[in-house]
Length: 238
Length: 238
DNA sequence: GAGTGGTCTAGACCACAAC
DNA sequence: TTGTGGTCTAGACCACTCC
Image 1 (cartoon, rainbow over the protein chains, first blue to last red):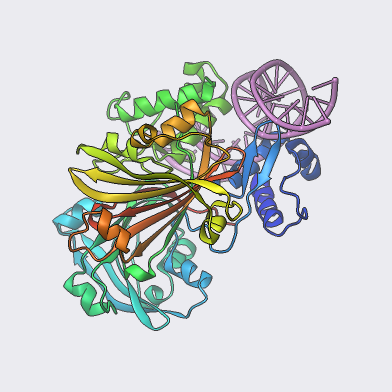
Image 2 (tube, rainbow over the protein chains, first blue to last red):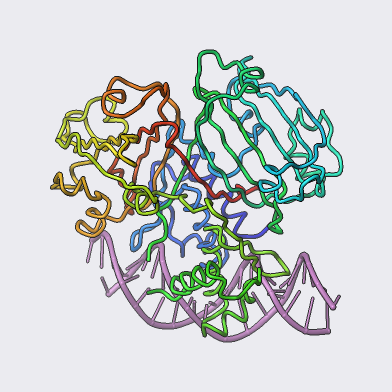
């Protein structure tokens, strides 16, 4: 593996496990460069990642401050699949595949998935249970060019794991939009909505490393089971 | 200004205004290095920012692909103040300062703002109107150590602008949590909630460059007026 | 084989903080 | 004055894409 990534992972480990005792500061860049026997720029590359991910804050003239993360401040920025989320949760989770089919793209899908009308796309509808309650409805549409085959078993496990390890597709980035809607008839039928009169909808477009758009997803959550945690650095200013 | 930042801004401009015509590719790093008369590493630093901010996607062996941003894909990742948001919106906006006072920190605030119980903190409650509807309730608490003075006029304009330009405070990063709650009595009294039975709550802790926590905010939105747009790169994998 | 981006180096100079 | 992080350089080698 690349040196700076190895160092990054090692430093993540050491900052989160109090390797340096109760010190709130990382060793200096020069000191780390000696320790790892690399150039200072390589250390800086690793530290930049730590800062981006909210593990440290660099302060000019002083050093790198370790940011303590208490309790629920787990980092779920970035793209997270339900399986990744589920393994972080302490509650039992279960996935029900409600639909797995190939449909022809209509007008709406055409624009969302960047395919031609009537082109075949995978449609997957899954219900997510947490503690035996049906609280999330995931509707995925995949560009069929990238995924020749898809089975119920794969959908029950993790589509992302299949894409990355079997098909060697590299997910690169996503655009997400979070809004609140009134439940549709489908929401009411498939989810345990109880008295709730809203659903939180996360619409995502997911892109591969070569910038091709290959997935459009609507993840519809019961509002009381929705939480989004974000770590944001100040926007670049002129 | 630093070279790589100048180049970053210049390239943002050129990629968003079709400076290179309909080409979807940026010039190569070596070519850019010649053009700007800097080293390749400096160009790479600028390009890394462009990639982080979703303007380009770098593809190994090929080059940097310009990511086209259509219509509503404006980048509101990061910390955005209401004033910044308001200037982006096409609708008339207005701020009503409902409360501006110094209160003593209670148990709840103590943990959220990292101050001692009974220490004085600024409390600011503001109602945000969009198109003459009261749709957002902002409740801000500031550590008084950092802000000696605060007036109604500043709160009506932009507290952030005051902090950054007058007090020279440098906001660095924030932790946000988005959840959905049932409206409180206060929400019902101060907002035009109409029939809506939920509010979207964004809880933020805002930190300065030296990692001191100086603000805790709850921004309470009428659900139909809430939208959160995010650009996310894949989480680092091992 | 030529061109691209990805990694890494050794060294330089700067602005800033702490003493 | 010393140490810290921030910027910038010139050059090297690599893996990858495309022809």
